[in-house]
Image (cartoon, rainbow, N blue to C red):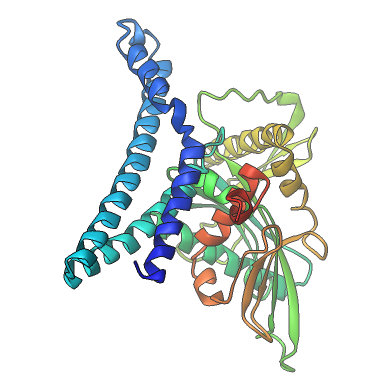
Length: 374
């Protein structure tokens, strides 16, 4: 077997090791038998919500087992085909099996990332909040670049993106924007993006063509499911209505019925300015509950808490990722040291590599390589 093919086999094997670890493969079949026994209970649907959750959990386990066993079997089959092809000097069989292994390696890597998304709210939709830092027009333009990056990423995932509120910059870009991104594991993928993002480039707004550094903060909160109870004391909030303002165009509607809710105990402020006042109030309240729920998740996870604390002032010392466009091309995540020179691809929404490295770190406290002992 050629060295290049052996490397592909090794990559698939490493993905299988992590899939087995996340699945807890030794007990998976026993857990499935327990699920099957509960599904056969004639009283299961007396509580529809509990039944639906049980069915979702069971199907998730079935899918995880099938994925692991399928990749494992495909790997063994293609290795056997290569060995047979080499023994019989059949170059066509060997070439076909090698191509299949390359495709399998991509599938295994993707499934490895998805297996990391098993947190309490990872499967939920999410709110994505972007706020320009100090730096005026430069930071507002950077905030708009980030908004475009995340919208492109979400569209590639097949997610639904709704702009909830937007505040335009005075000369260019945006001061802030809030999106709701709906799709399976939307929060699980995006939660690692909370923090300050730093851009270094030659400013298009500087006639002297000097290099500028800009900062923008990103915060991510899960959309709270109806079955998650979050109590909000009416005396703890203030609700204001105002006339919204924005850059105009197809995404932003000017209305007299925008809503701002301030939660006094935490200082959280949420807004919505897209629909009627009644709908805006409902959207803003859901956003507030999501923020409060995120605070509770933070208390349970030291790593997540640390990440969200780092999403404080958008400036030096708080950044999680640097995007350098001048004097060289590099995007580097400062938590995992994952880096890529494909800055154009990243800004066009190719974020899975960066997100995946951070997800692996959050699960094990180590990089993927460290977790695998390499």
